[in-house]
Structure formats: C-alpha cells, structure tokens
Amino acid sequence: MKVVILPGAGSAGLTWETVAARLDASIHPLPDLPSVEEIATSLLDELPDSPELVLVGASLGAMVALELTHRRPIAGLVLLAAGFGVTVSDEVLARFDDPEPNFLARMARGGVAEKTEAMIKARLLDFEARGVDVLAHHLRTLAAYEPTAPSPAVPTVVVQGELDRSVTLADHVELARQCRGVLRPIAGIGHSAYLEAPDEVVRLTQQVIFEAEGAGHA
Image 1 (spheres, rainbow, N blue to C red):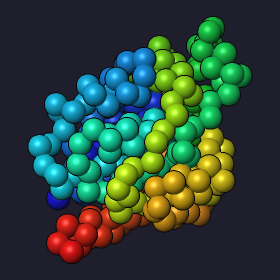
Image 2: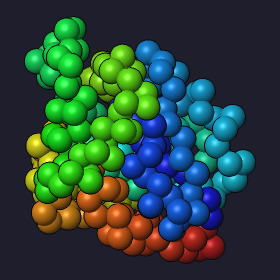
Image 3: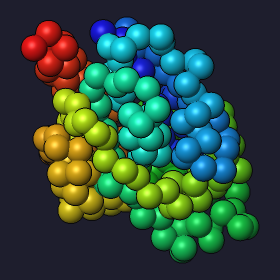
C-alpha cells in the first residue's frame, strides 16, 4: 500500500515531514493552478502507479484527494481540516489584496491551538517556501470548489482538531457523511493535526491502510 500526502493551501509540505517519514509516504505540494480539477489532473502523472493508494489530504489537499477519486483508483482516504467543500470568507481573501509585512506569520499562528514558537516557526517556514501569492491563489481555488462524493466509497477517516477555528465541526461531520466514512476528533489541537498530533495522524492513517487492505482482499 502506497501513501501520498497532499498538503493544504500555500504549503510546501515541510510540516508533513515527520508524518511522511513514519508512513514512508511521498509528499506532493499542490501546484499553483486556478481550479481543483486542474490541480488533480496535473498530479496524476506524479502519483505512484499503484491501485493500492491511500491519499492523506489537508484542507485544499483534502479537496484534491476527493477529486482524484474520480480520476484513478484510490484505496482509502484520510481527510484533515476540511468539510465537504471549504468556506473561505471574503474578509480572509481581502486581506491578501494588501498584506501587511508580518502577514504570513499571523497566518502561521492562527493554524495551531498551542502557540509554541517551534510550531509557529515550522508553519511560517512552510508558507514562506511558497509565498503569499500561492497561498492567496490556493485559498481562492479552495473557496470555488464544489466536491462530489467518492463513488464507490472507500475506507475514509475525517480528522478534526477540536479547536480548529477555520473549519467547523458540522462541516467535518458533513464530509464524513458524504464519504460514508468516520469522524475522528482530536482534543486540544487546531487546524494542523499533522503538526500538532502527528502520532494520531499516523495511527489513523495506518487504520485506513488496514481497512483498505482488508477491502482489497474481500
């Protein structure tokens, strides 16, 4: 079973390295393209050529993962910090029109519940590797996307940080319902479970791998 990580908006994937190493997963930062459909198409050639593929996606990466289920065989999904579609407010998007000098630092702080300097720095370096423009483009792409549920359904876990201020619990529940999956809240964390609770993200991904392997041999 191969595991592919699809990071969120504006991410270079640097904050996923701990999880990726433990899962022997490849990280595929999302290209700067104007639609989720185009991003998914562009990734097809770089994904492992295996029907036994588990996609782990956060935020925009979760939406790209859903889109990929309609384009190639996928064995399982781990979806973090996302609903069935993700609302991005006009107020948030307007901040990119004239970003202040410490704009990315503020975005980095907002994504974690326990605001340790190490976590904030990790998120900031990750955003800086792609830049403000890519983050802005990705968020606009995310706001415009209307997903379609995987058909047939595959083993799916939706991971919700209970202190996530960007995506509501109700939105996470709807994503799990549409995917016929299960919701797994994690206490005490925010929008970045892969950074704040890597052990739990690894465990839940291994659970999906186990279920996908069982489904493949049923």
